[in-house]
Length: 304
Length: 226
Image 1 (cartoon, rainbow over the protein chains, first blue to last red):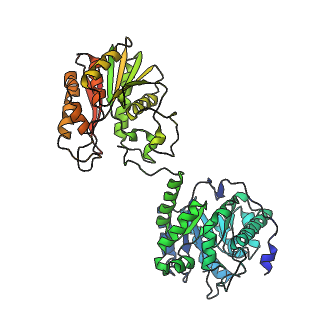
Image 2 (cartoon, chains in turn yellow, red):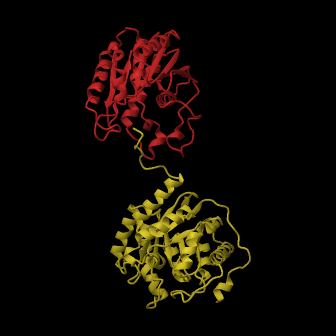
Image 3 (cartoon, one colour):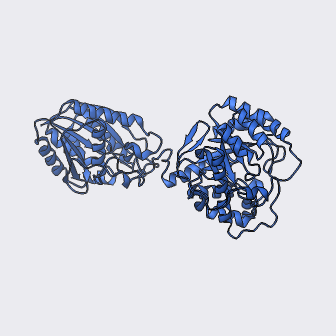
């Protein structure tokens, strides 16, 4: 595929571990961030249409913020195949909403889940801070938009997929090597396009162009990705690999999701894209306390 | 001779680092801080910190509580490993009050008989013309079903008697506390209070109790004696 060949090859660059900048905020290395999912779609895989209504979506934002979300991820197009969502329609779904959220929360980090540069540009104009390019740089101009607006960029891996397609018999000699090569290549491309390196995030993209075995392997070996120094986004919430692993339907994947979250946090991931904000926040705070990065909320047992 | 004294309890939670993100029992912390300020206001030549230990011994004035023994990730802002809990809390309270003057850090065997405690108190009072005693220890740990030591019906009367003795400045009553009963009730303050009684050597100090409660089932008492 053309877009795969477009990324620089060779040994991609690591990054000095350090703060992650998103919007006006700067997040230290040891802070684990919850990215709350708000889908402006009628047909996403989990609780489809729940925030299709703008009022419901804003309510969801208020709740997510109250539950401890650090970042909001707004998407207007489901990942799965389905009725076409034109650029104009995606902009109509997402941009006024992002503007409303920005007006209500001047400092909240807003991410837009998009793979096309036109909606990317429009959401940045409306105040988005991060472009979550889930389809792995399919449209290289998304990086240019991020650079132009001083926004961040998520560099993800989807193997050989084009947007909104399902994996068909994907295979890798070494899936982690493939992921690392791709996301670091994209990160390098973004840097050359002028994106602030402190605003670049990498995402192995569980389930995207991968079977369940691949996603489990990526989870197991996530430390290899975090060792590159680039901030890692873990997006596992209620995904099929969790469902297949546990034999659980989408509404019964929270425990599995939190297990992936905990392992990912332990291995150094920094952003956790989540449907279940409060549970994810708690899981991350627990891991942070186990690691010694966060003191307990209140310790009295045995100390009286 | 002794010019002033204070009684404070010794829960580890008085070390701010140990309670996590929440400040626990701010009113107790405030009472302890005020009692220590009162102590230092007397401009003592030396502050004798007294608390129970495994044996009667004098510790180095530079020693501190090893917080990492209670919370492994908490590293030693307070320094080197060491002091028994009660002495460590006493040192911490003095540090928090900004006291940098001479300290005499005195552990008393938790099982020491009353007579030995009284004798030790008399000796401490004689080390300088103006001695302040900071006696650190707790009452019973068996004050209810939720208490660390569960419920013992003798706990509340024991603590009441201690409180009354302090309120009355009745050092003889403190001197008369039963070490065996105190041990049964998991009282950590008995020996230190008897050292204090010995330091006052028959005098009847004016006292003020600023805190007496058992928020976690352990009797905490904060008082000043002058």
